[in-house]
Image: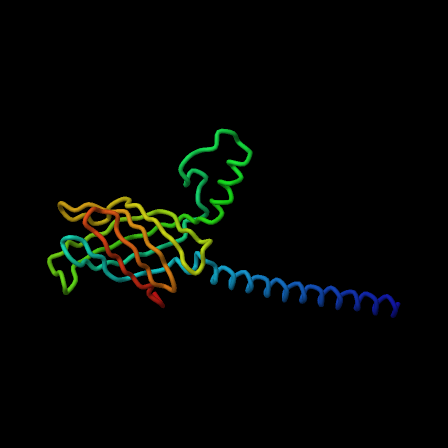
Length: 186
C-alpha cells in the first residue's frame, strides 16, 4: 500500500511538474509571439504620424493614423490569373505575401506658415510593402469624408517610411512634398 501511495504521489508530482513546465513553456511562447508581433514590419508602420505637406496653396499641417487591416486581398494587385492554379497564381501569392492592407484617418489643418489653409479629415486605405525593411512603401487612397471643407478634394498619397520618418507626396496636381514623423507614446 505504501508503494502504491508513493507511486501515486510521484505520479501526481510528475503531472504537476509537467503542467508547470507546460505553463512556463506556454508563457515563454506567448511572450515570444508578442515580441515578434511588436517587432514585425507592420508594427513599424502602424501608429500616429504628424507633419506637413505642401501644395500650390502653401504648407498644410497633417496627422495620419495607420492601422493594420490584415493580409492584402487577392485582388489587391492589378491583372488577373485566368486559371485557378499555376505560375501566374504562384507569382501573385509570393507578391501578396509582401503586402499588408492598411487603413486610417488623414487630418489636415492650417499652420503658422499658412493660417488660411483649409481643415478637414477623411478615411484612407491602401497597401504597405513590408518586404524591404527598413524602408517601407505605402500607398493610400482617399475614402469617406469625416469633415469636408467646401471646394476641397481628397488626394491619394505615396510615401516611404524609414526609421519612423514618412517622406512622399500627395498625388493631387500641384502637391509635391509630404514629410511626417511617427509619434511615440500616442
